[in-house]
Length: 511
Ligand code: GLU
Image 1 (cartoon, rainbow, N blue to C red):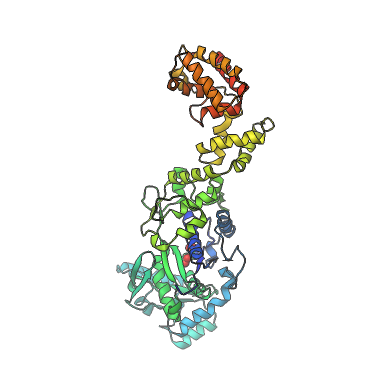
Image 2 (cartoon, rainbow, N blue to C red):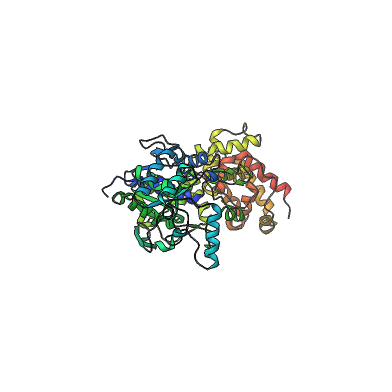
């Protein structure tokens, strides 16, 4: 690769950024860093009718939360190609449109909305694909059919017009996509797209190609939905005479519904209970909430990791990757051609892996917050809380679950898992508990080991098998049937609290 790698993420601020868009940004970031290149953010806001306030800020905040930092562009400090917002670049597109008209690759079209509708109706009636193209353009009001004087008169008069690309007739446009290999389109399936409007705004196609050229983009990595636009873009590069610096194209596979049929949508998330956006978003018009990964309790590292695996794999068994490791491992030739099914259980699994890696110091404040709400924060010290974190973090998928899973370290259980009591409490249990209480009372050091020795001794004395009592013992101490190693729990809550709980069980549980 001799050219400097420069890639861009070019979202339109039309609403919250779908995780498919976040994945596009991530792959661009990984590719840029892998090749020691640049990654820039450009905001494509030429379609003012679709502009949504707050969407741009949302996009930038999402990328920052995930650590997908750009080297230049909106939100990350301007580089030498500023401005990076297309609405602010508006004045520079006109010359490019005029250049294409002068070279015969584009033309003015003056057709009114009614005239366009009439053309479409006419063609539909005769069962022909209704589009403005090499055949129909000859019947419409444009600079190819009107006299030069008439065109000049209309322009001088300030008539509204658009500039359309003059597609070559029946030409095969081929290019090599970095993910799909050779793809080919015939221009007879395409139409003369509008490039520029008399209000001075370029359309997506013109602005996108001109900016990629001016910003010296080497690779266009974007979603599959843009593949049908790519042949037009290739033709634009040719028409401008920029073919030698045309970027390489890489169209990423779609993110599919968990069932695999169709594109992953907000509705799927609502239906199945998982977010499809990075952050919460409230629609400014409808006040409708779209839930986000951040607010749902996902860690940014987990979201990066899970998104990386939706459409790419490293070719090894390794599944956990930091952003830096992803940079090292990433390549476009390991991106799949077929759509990637979203798997919500896998998403949770990734989060769980990262929660486990959190230090006790990092988790402790989450637990302290819950203790504060329960007005228990003054009864326990930092060291105790950290130890609880270290025991419980294996069991949770989200940090916000920690209180639910660790309540019994702080509060003597008031209820017991009924099923276990029913199944495991026997006539021998009261005596065993009495012996355990006596043995525990005699311990001067109360550690995992001394507790276990005393426990084994009491079991032997009562001729009870460990496997028959262990689960009941857990329920007596914690109220619930699952959790971290039991003797560690007992050691942490301490001798007197353990004895209190045994005594409580003895007096309150009866079969
Ligand atoms: N503005 C387009 C979008 O919203 C960018 C497509 C491209 O990357 O060329 O996705």
